Amino acid sequence: MNHRIQRYLRAAVESTREPVPAGAFVLYVHPHSAHPFANYAIPADGAAIDDGAALVAAARERGLVPRLEYIEPCFPSVEQALAPSGFTREGRLRLMSCTALNPWQAPAGVKLAEVGLSSPLVADTLTATNAAFGDGPPSDADVAAWPGRGVAALVDGRVVGSASWTVIIDGITEIAGVGVIETMRRRGIGGALTAAAVRGAFAAGATLAILTPGDDRTARVYQRAGFTDTTTMLHLRIPD
Image (cartoon, rainbow, N blue to C red; front, side, top):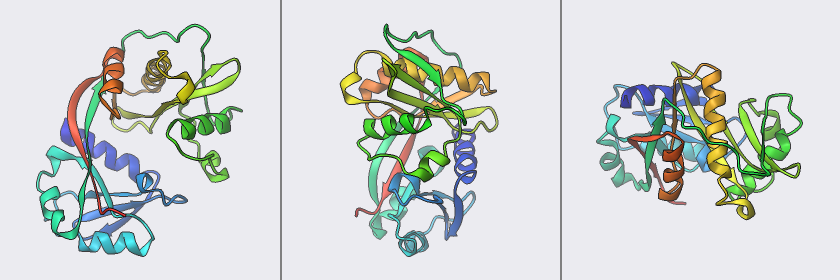
């Protein structure tokens, strides 16, 4: 399962970013964002792990923060090998998966709406998502790049939260961007969005949904939706 999920994560990021070989790693560069979370490396399959010097150089050359995201059990020696080059642990994340969704209805007064490619809600959905994560308004490029796989929560016609799912490959998808604006949290909206995103992904052909909870509280929400702990991911970076 670890290697199946890692293969999926690599294929998914390759579908939207430029792969840049860098020694024992591949740096995936976002086409129009330099945000650290949008640009990261994954160890190359079968490569002898090196000290990351080529990765650091490739990232710096492009004005990016050197970062990695990978399934920990697939590459157990990477963290130790990169420590001398200044990489530190940004986070060790629980990765959860779901094959059978538990019922979860939207709370009273909340409407869930699919946000497809031609939906008039795309800009408002991205604005609410960015606000939920403390980011600024989306750019025109962000709106134009919307992949059409998402769901929004509306209260009195206003988008207050959203969730999306990534491209489906080998039956796997990742539930991403589950966020609710601060004034509307702790009402069950996040769980309802998660469940709606999983339903949408399963209807589109996925059989396994994965996600990484931000903390233990959100993990409990996902557990109630049908997710269970499966493996761990490591995020490494050289501090700014």
